[in-house]
Length: 494
Figure 1 (cartoon, rainbow, N blue to C red):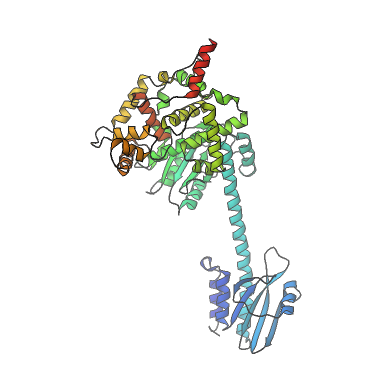
Figure 2 (cartoon, rainbow, N blue to C red):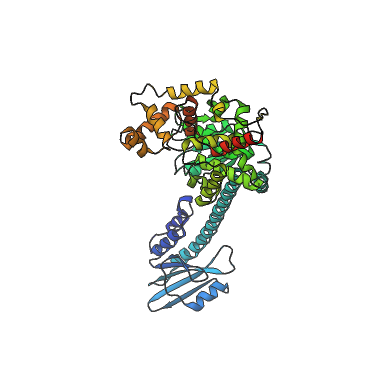
């Protein structure tokens, strides 16, 4: 037998250190220490570790039932010792058995006895760890469920679910949403750091759509500072935050946070907040914008309240991200997302394959969601889109934004304008301009840091650039069937 004196005991104790707690390694060490074969099996005879050896079934049954604690057997040139091992949450015992050609001396017997005790401890620790992991998974699933309820504007249900584990978390009418981006490998630790930084006063969710993102819904005003401290000093970690929104606008706030995250990649401190830059809707006349929005979205008023909120929340996310990503965030299938968006398309009489249509419907949906916060003046009669886009402040902003592209000799502005006009299709753009599709993609990618907006990924950033082209007249406004119908109806009923 290997080892002398107390060395075997020291080696056995090493297996209890945090880095060595592995039942299979302990059983393998036992076999090596006694110059034999060792096996650990549960009450049903399932091998848990080691190498299976033939055992006397009657002896095993006695140990499993708890009638005896240990047994010895010899025959056919083999000597065996069997010891009962308590199993967590079980009335029956497992069996740790050793078989070797030589008789058991005191040292071998002691090694087996003490190893059985260590195995019991490790089995309990493994069960505790597994229970902890199950609890962590359940908690993560619950956090995601709350977020998904907020995304579809089911605030009552979200509060009810949150009240069980995080009393008071959603006892607020408004919150900010932050998206923290790190590496895939570090995301779990990043999420834990966000929980610790906010002292569990925020809803922290591992994003189901982007495996580098952690989503934080923070009712507390101090969360921004606390979360920025997580990012500081980490070159591969970024944070984007929304402006403060009602809980019913969580989906809108999430889109704002993702948009700000794109800007954060160009900032020296790796952080940005949506309110830090001028957005086109803030430069439009509120009365005109609200009147046009109500006019465009009026066909959706026929929907039942719950269906209305569900369809609009899904469409907002579907316009902001891909159908696949929106589906993961909402916890539904991508076909469900597409079906809901197609229903909205049908009611509005629009075509979401047109980027100008997407930009304008996105503008209307977000404007409608914010009407209760900043109501505009009442206005009678239909509002033409041209009136909404004709304000001098908006035009000045648009000319300034697109003018940033002019110094580039590659004529990025022409490429971008053409690319938007054909629905963001690089191949069709290349055919129109007589260049290679890869050149188109390079031009669009080159425009992103200049405009401080992500363009290749559809969403708020791209739609702002589309609105800038509409405001300057560089792109023709689309035919919005619902808007046109509303105008026709209004003229008939005057």
